[in-house]
Image (cartoon, rainbow, N blue to C red):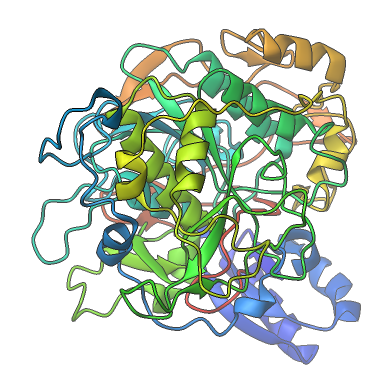
Length: 552
């Protein structure tokens, strides 16, 4: 569980209470002014009775399918991952025109990749002019100017580095799969990874509506997120949202989930049969692919829906967000100083990382052939994938992506068929067990309402989303979520203007009075000593673990 307190005195009293109960205090979480702990369930009520103390139980926030990856070891550097996938050799020549190879490799130049995640920190390798464009911050941290758009959790920065990191520094420099692609970052998650399905759906709708804004050219959507929805992909609103992106020409690349081979379903929205569902491969600590296996944390799926392709996803090294939740909680995920003297890198495992690799690969193909449809991109990746020897017939999908082969293969005429998703299911069923909670009251955001308490009417929203009218200026589902236009730059990058959220409540619990103080990005790390913001908890991000330990 995670324990937060308003004062140093309250933190001390909480720790003493945990120890008296026979429990253990684990890690200090300075960024959120708290600590992680384990204690008997019967004693939790005594802990919450302490003035200024708030408790988030593991059952409310824990990612699914994490325990099986608790013994993660080793590192997988990004350069060999890109080399094995052919990302360093894919030629710009369009195979459809019959002209010989140009000798120039693809870089993703001119392609926008929308990253709906926890924000992006402006670390070296992601701070080149024009490299990151900050779309609207739809997270609960959007109301704090000092945290807006930036990555207090650490997940989004890691993904961005894999997709489009671009650091020319020799030695510790890092390059992503598509180093000249643009990242359009939409922050939906807070420092503890919390986000509600309604926030993710709103972000997808915004991406579709603004995909052709000047300078964006959003052709790829990276979604390393998934819920254990209890309704079919045909009904689920999250599934409907990604399908609308797909039909509008955006290639949706989605994590399959980390519940392992025992999982008979993919997480939502990877369960939608149109999108590219990505599983993870385990490189077994070598650069060669002949010993690779399907990572055991990958959702297996079933005959009707399983991962489409695989990419490396075990112990992947990417950029670190210093001072973020993950960085503070798992310092052993940092790379040894012999390999990373500046301590700028971090390792993590999951279908999240594999999804980011594939998103970068898609950007390369779209640079080569801008007129490719999402269906054609999917067909190219699957038809040229390299099968894993003795791989599980479902979990392995078509195999590991091979961009060199895909780039040399002529454009197919493929068009996916099937019944379109209706989106007429419920928001609550889409959440599954992935809820956010007000840590002051313990109340869950549940039922057919969004984060502002506005009623969710599927028929109204689906019609608006399909017609690209779900956003009106900065309003979505009847509430003002963000500003109406591009605003002042954030740390030198273009950004969307914010808006102040006005009064709202749900389940009788208001959260207009959330207290925020000055968490400051100083160019290297978060200054966490004075951050008193209330946190929402709950997470569904598809990373299997950092440093071999499950997120608590």
